[in-house]
Image (cartoon, rainbow, N blue to C red; front, side, top):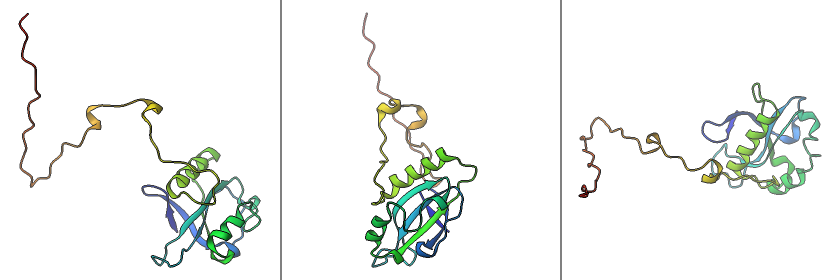
Length: 159
């Protein structure tokens, strides 16, 4: 198992060598990976392509997929390619698409023609301010209590 994604990630099955893998007839999100040289860590993989399918057996995997030449070029050999799959529990097509977009924004895989950013813009929902959006006002038990300064007020103007 390998975890991919932001925060806790999604538990993907694999990675498995792509060249010896037979795609099952099931819906899943899949990631194409390779082990970069030199390997910084024993189980370190680079994500080079992410997508989803309603039926993995119809995706023309392993090497008849339209993006397979890019995978082989990036990895250096078809025998350096690995695949990891995630069957989204109870997830339909739209849920798989959201996961794919998140993974693309996190890993920026070079063989995905479409890229997504992790940007947030105020104009999407407007600026938001509330007492709960400020810094936490908690202190550690060993810290002395600090007094908050009084807010400055303007003197009353004679009327």
